[in-house]
Image (cartoon, rainbow, N blue to C red; front, side, top):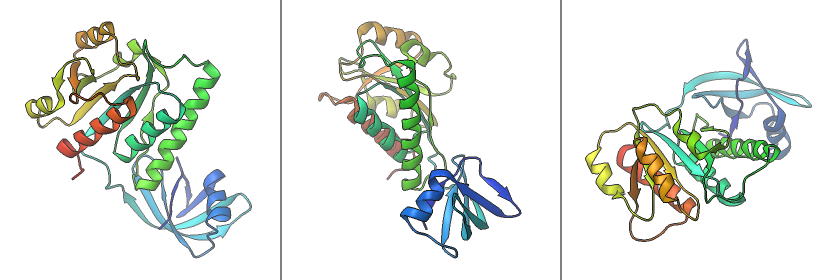
Length: 245
């Protein structure tokens, strides 16, 4: 059944009202009508199976016939801190990380990131990334939309991390092989990993992270693009400790 994203849905007497862009998509793009069945998810883990019973000029109403909890979330909690990349590359990371089950994405500026963004541009980008995450969640069947944090400066990334996660920072100039870390730390349920820009991290940035409990790691001898490294790492983590494979 087609899936639609409605955060904080309005539900009254077993009826759920869909408004805005999703209602337009239902009526004008997919041309669904009364009697058609759809699924609505709220982004926090609940899904509602229902049948369209009303079509208005700007809204669609379904009668809920089943309420479910999402079963497609990974048992591994992952947070990706991603240094800001140029336009489409950042969009790609957001989309693919969502499909691979990431729980949160923290975009940040590092010393070798693309140029800083004005505040108005930051807000526009952030809203775009949230839309991309929502669309990717809808497409891949997730019931939860990953949190996209506001753009941060490098030191801010390390301020509010709880002590439980395994902390990794990827560095092409050295570090422990990821395979060795996964073998040694087997059984972890939470991972916070940091991926730098195309130019990599400076030695000062790596030292800063190490002082805060992060392990510098490498994916091997080949230097990967930043967006490739993020997707590659998340895929490996989900294969080893999550729900892929």
